[in-house]
Length: 236
View 1 (tube, helix red, strand yellow):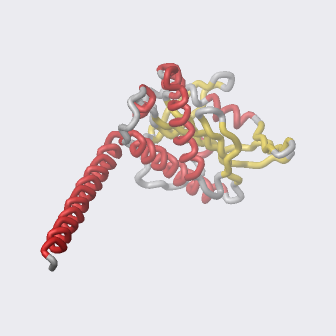
View 2 (view 1 turned 90 degrees about the vertical axis):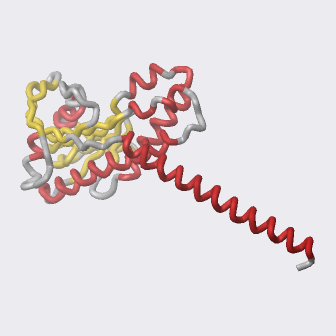
View 3 (view 1 turned 90 degrees about the horizontal axis):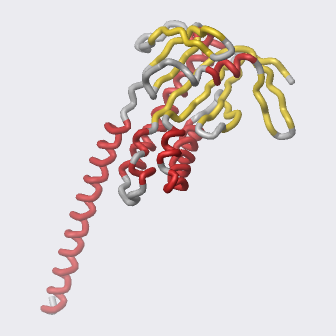
């Protein structure tokens, strides 16, 4: 067991419980949707982010921070990339109208949120598994239950936010959240503003263009075949 100062990233799908409970008849599809979305989030992560474990509708990452400031800026950029990957796939899947079940029809109600924290944790290995332990890990998990009225957001705790330096253009809202068993925690909240519906319209437009091109190509090739048949018949 070793102590390390790390950046902790906890990514959680908002609306998961209600989504699963509301669509028990289409449970396999709902679980499949969650699995694909979480898989996309995991695949979008890169060094220095390390996946520690999956927790149902959540994924716990950490990044060692030998240079805390540089690593913090890299981690924040990656977290924003995880959101982009999540909403791009959500839009792509929601365009498909091949399934009429409740889960597939209501997947656009899902959102993503993230807790980004910095602190000292104990990293221990039990057989082939790596475990993060310590009060800072608890803080990150407890912040999932908060008073933020939105479903899509990135919470940056004060220890992490202080390492970012001057980030022009990053709009944040200062808040103090009451974490159960921890007490008041000062945080800065960023609202990424990804819109699955807007992305869905873009994908729909692309699909419509693809369909039109496909029909045009079919008409063109069909016309050539007809002309060839006529020429053959005339012996030309």
